[in-house]
Length: 313
Image: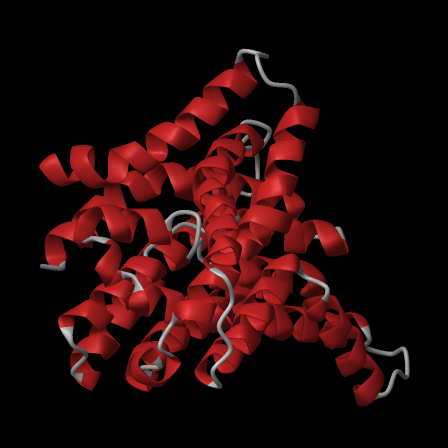
């Protein structure tokens, strides 16, 4: 119980505060959208830039950890997409539902909860996962969706792939990650920037998680759970149970050190992120399932995360 109050509750209180003020009409939808746009398009990319730029990639690029996490993620996508087809959803809906199961909230929930539980020194594995999370999963999701939509249109593979790659590169989170990787290489080559630059970066980065969590609460208020109960149950089960269980099992098989096991399992245990809804909105399919799954899974994750924190020493 102390884990729930000391580690999980502070993060969800910020989310809940955003939900409360949106519910009571103290913060308009336009204001919530503005805070979320600031967080996702500017503050969070700067946080990613800072973290990737200063990460020791040679030491932290743990292939067994990444394999455990992403095998779990793609297994969840497969279960979600095939399960959606089995219950009669159209192909495009099935891809969007699979993406909900695939895309855990690695940054807005995974980072602060892991930091609260184990300290800021335990985040190296989280940043390694996050460094390829959005580029890899967006590339995969967009590519699968574009090929699904292109059936019967006589579009070349190259054209579909270019469409997918263009969509990924335009994403602010991916831009922040790529810029951080370039800066990392430049720093290793001997580039030294004035401390004032990093101070400014740090100020923006510190604003990222509080503002994003607050805005997440305001955004979740709009998502009223309704209908599609089988699809929503499947998404919540894949995200909160299947993904972390597979990651934990593979982590044991691969003999991961405890720090890597914590980062991979805790990241896998997070609810689907708002990006899952944004992906569905881009293509106009599965939006109700995505919205309800993000809301319900985020609420349920308070309990499931607490259980994983008890499992992981």
